[in-house]
Structure formats: C-alpha cells, structure tokens
Image 1 (spheres, rainbow, N blue to C red):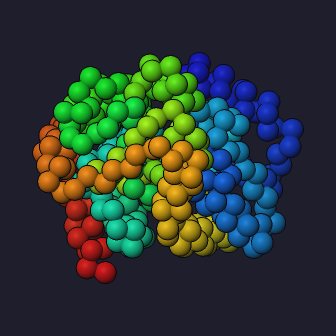
Image 2: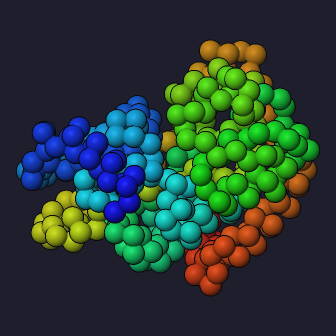
Length: 335
C-alpha cells in the first residue's frame, strides 16, 4: 500500500470506524445527495435496507476526500462501495478511457439506457478488467450530455485556441481537448470554481445538472453543446468484500443495483432541460448554444485523432473493447 493510500485509509478509518459494524456497508460517491449519483445511492440504500439486515452508510463528495481518495479506500476495503466515473478510473484501467472517445456515445437517452443495461463490453469485458484492480463492477449508468462552459463563446475549435480548459486527470480527456485546440489543464474538482473565478482556467465540461447544482454557471458566461459526449459513471464494490458475501446478500445487492438503475434512467428524463431553465432564471445573461451539425465538423475530425490515440494507449485490449462497444451501441440503436 502506498504512503498516500495508507494516510487516506487511516483518515477514513478515524472518521467512520467508530460507527461501523459488520452489518454496516459504507458507500462513497463523487456528488452530493441531491445530484444524480446521490439519487442513485439513496435508491440503492433504500432497497438494501428494506430487504436485508444491513445498513448502508452514505458518504457524499468531500466527506472522505476527492475521487482518488475514495477509490483507494474502496480498494483497501475501508469502503464496501464506491461510485466513480471511468474518467478517474482510467488511471487504473486504461481501457475505461474509451468513454472519453468523442462522439462514440449518442445523446439519445433511451438508446444509452439500453446500451448500459445490455452491453457485452460493459457487463462482461469490463468485469475482468475491474476485478484485476480488486473491484466488482456492479453497474455503469449515464448522467447526461456533457456541456462546455467557458468565459468566451465557442462556435468552432478555433475558439478554444489557448483556452485553459479544466479536465479530469485522465490522459485521453487531455488528448481530446488538445485535439479540440484547447490547452487541457487537469485539476481536482475542488479547485475548479476558484480557478474559473480567478481566470487560472477559462473553461470546463460537465452534465447540465452539475452546472446548476455546483453553481459553476456563476463563473462562466457561455454554455455550449457540441454533442461530443455523455457523462458515464460506475458503481463498484470491493471485490474481496463482494465475493465473501452469501448468495443471498449478493442477490440483494444486484437487485438494489437494478432498482437504482431503472430509477435513475427515469429520473434523468428532462433533467437537463429543467436544470438549464434554473440556470437561465438565475443568470439570464448566460448564452446557450447548441452547435449545428456543420459547425461540429472540426470536433468530429478531432475525434478520429483521439480514437487512434486511445488504441495507441491501450493496444489490442483497448481496440477490442472499442469494437465491442460500437457493436453494442449499434444494437442499442435498433431498440
């Protein structure tokens, strides 16, 4: 165990050790209780507690540290469950960066729901990759179309030239924004609002609901939809913990995951529109642009470069995952 992981684990134990018991399962995630991951977690908790003798203890963003911290705690067995975007998991599982290949995922939420539920790449191929990192992949699910928020308008890749654009610490996302023409700047989420406020960075991306709930719209002036991605997240369990459970407890966890998934897919319907309306009410001068198809050409051309970079980074394993995902997405498009 690394020094950082040891310190992180020690801090987490100091915080939660006194209240935990064998019947308490700890579950950390990257957002607040009111946001999509928090809503998923609460539905999961509700089902587990109603159908077993176990209690789920929820730890929203910041309670136990940043995304890297909660992943380390899950791998160390301090947390039984962790909800984290493949954007961060990509440092552990390079193939998980596939979710940042631009224009791979559609914007249609119904197609996405079918894809995450039925995909062989997710439900079979990724299972083994996560297991190698001591994690049981329970479910991936969508959080909504990603929007860019910037200080100045973005109508083409040229408008991103020399823009310091915050990205997660994910190599492929760095390559994506470099290909788009920006200066990608990895930053922990806790530094983003202040970075925009002081002009250390001039842009960032996230789903629409997150732009409202985190008030990131207060420190940017333009929201742009280029259709390049949908935000993916994943619920995982510590593998040793999961494999040590009875078949009955494993079944309860799987049922709770399914219930939470169906809930969140329905919950997301119209969420982007309703949260965008709240942003416009709070800041009427905010400009919102949905780039027409002809203005997306440079972004789509860059996507080909990023896809090639992904295969270069991940080799045969990544190429196979990408091919399977494309087949799964085509099947989901047929309904």
